Amino acid sequence: MKKIPLFSGFLTAMLVLSASADIGRVYHPYIEQNEREIEYGQMVYDLGEEQRYLNQLGFGYAWSERFFTDVYVLSETVNHDGHEEKGYELEAKWQLTEQGEYWADWGFMLEAGTMRDENEHELAAGLLFEKELENRVIVALNTFVEYEFGNDVDNELETALRSQLRHRFSPAIEPALEIYLDDKDYAAGPALMGMQRLGAGKRLKWECGWMLGLDQETPNNTLRALVEFEF
Image (tube, rainbow, N blue to C red; front, side, top):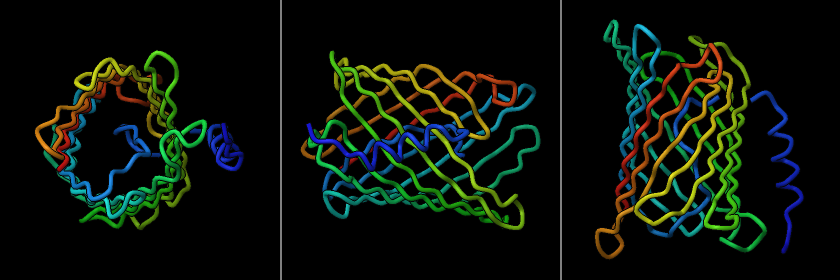
């Protein structure tokens, strides 16, 4: 098998950093040309006496077999005062290697986000890794470097690690274990995901997960759900 020492070294360097993205999802490096998608996701953070709700609506398109973009509209609400914050996010993903070409599959992602009513922005770059092991077990890793800046936030550089170990039981259901490590959250827990074909070139994908806080600073429970229509 061919190897990619440059990518391997970069991944190792990222992992030794003190692992800033909220608990959301683990990304995969694969792209299908001309694929379009509509996506809705929600996360609920249990903060004890209050809950925080994050909603996102996204629209994506694969411009080629190697390049994909997503645009998101975000809203976040804390239940005790009903205050809502809104923002926008743009993601661009590149599939760097053909599936199965090397010992693992690789992708690269850029993210840019901004809040609508506050002077708060972020830029992030991430490396995506995925490898299929024996017995239909798949491991995926995302490593991110993120820079937050603006008048309403401390300007700082942060890192994050997301990982997923899942079993390809069937296309309709895949159980998984996920871990999220960043400056805000240390959490891990079970997840389920699956896919249903709806006809020629149409698929419905879904994910749900229950993440448990691993330290006192992380919410005790975080529930996440995602539905994605591809056509």
